[in-house]
Length: 255
Image 1 (cartoon, rainbow, N blue to C red):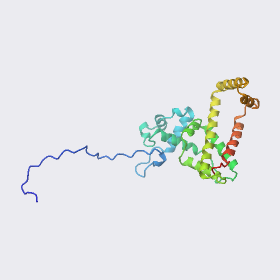
Image 2 (image 1 turned 45 degrees about the vertical axis):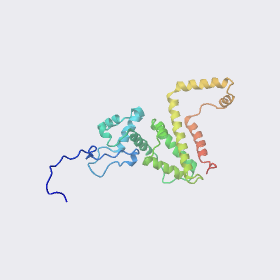
Image 3 (image 1 turned 90 degrees about the horizontal axis):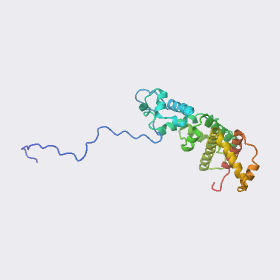
Image 4 (image 1 turned 180 degrees about the horizontal axis):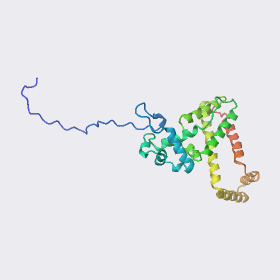
């Protein structure tokens, strides 16, 4: 038992490290914004929404291009403080994801596919090209950062429903969708390049004509000789689309 005689108390021994903080470390924002709740059930209703933020960003991008989109510009368009916007969109990449999913809402899907796979894919392709033409910033962003939000997933589900009657398995149908989307995005980019660089296009045609006439490239010369007049962009899209659809619906030996 301890002695009944008390001894002078000594100072507590110094801690071996810094005292733990009384404030918990906030969790890091998820890389995927769709894993982050838009709002919690507590507190006042937020002044803004993901839809309004995306709409403001899309308005800026449509008018001035994607490079003009910044958190500061979007906040100003909403009449909000720049820092307050980070409560809704923690990162610039999240803002891009919201923009991609907002434009994906422009698709109009029927209740169910018609059963004519080629016709349904053609309709989907024309819708996608129309959306890309309305939003010139979209093709480059789609090719670099595919959308995975709720509206993009509805597009994916619809594509898989269209191609369900084919002999392709699920993985092959997803690969087919990537090829399909990549073709449309690249075609839309080509249209933009051609419209913006008429002088370059004319010089390129002249250069290729000289190369074909040189005799050093016989197959190029033969292709030029039978190419015919320049095609209307819509007709060129139809021809190329038919080839892409035929290609993606052809089973390979892996299936």
